[in-house]
Image (cartoon, rainbow, N blue to C red):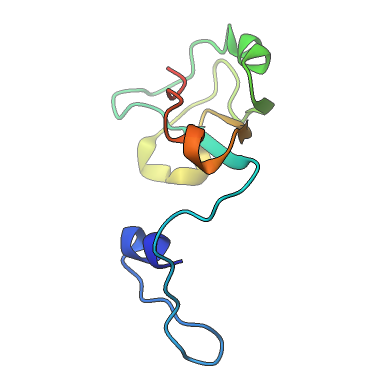
Length: 104
């Protein structure tokens, strides 16, 4: 929690008000992740979603969700909920998840 709090900029405390301190990642069998791909600031419309089906073939990928279809208007100013597509999945332990490259 302390690591997450440092990144978020919000103070963390337990329900009783005691500070929560975690010195690092908690070891676990798998780590879940979610990437939401936002439109570039110059984009005005989705041209293509071709090739997104291939993402499901990558190791660890469990879900590929297309949120905008070809021809749909996009505007980065609409915020994070207006992403083009998302990819969710799991990687190995907390140790090796830091060493795996991000999808490009």
